[in-house]
Image 1: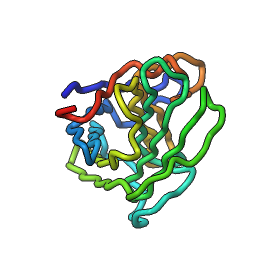
Image 2: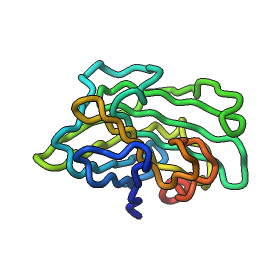
Image 3: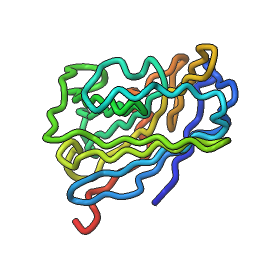
Length: 180
């Protein structure tokens, strides 16, 4: 599984976080499993447990995001996954246009583990939430640190301000489930 190193947007540098990485750790007919690793997490703000359930505006604090766009298409899906265990999934017809809530038969599983210098966030997204076939992807993270410092991490930052939706951010690939 390929590890993707995210970069912080230069307009919003982190305080203590030194690196954020993301990778797919499994993709079966039932789940897409993704892991984010945050290095230098000593000042990381972790949203308190809120229980599973959909919620909007998770990006206002520490949140992990995945964007998937079927290869060759304009439509894409956005997944916001919080250490609080809240989540959101949206479909877009094209760049920031036609946003609708993506239906789900079950909820993602999310778990945050913190070490002394790093944090691991694992998310298992139900397969019926994932677009079919091979997808272009953007792995991203919003990282809040003590004192209200917020940094925006993604595979690419083509604009003067952070924009995870920008089509040029979709530089990774997520294939179909293993064995397909």
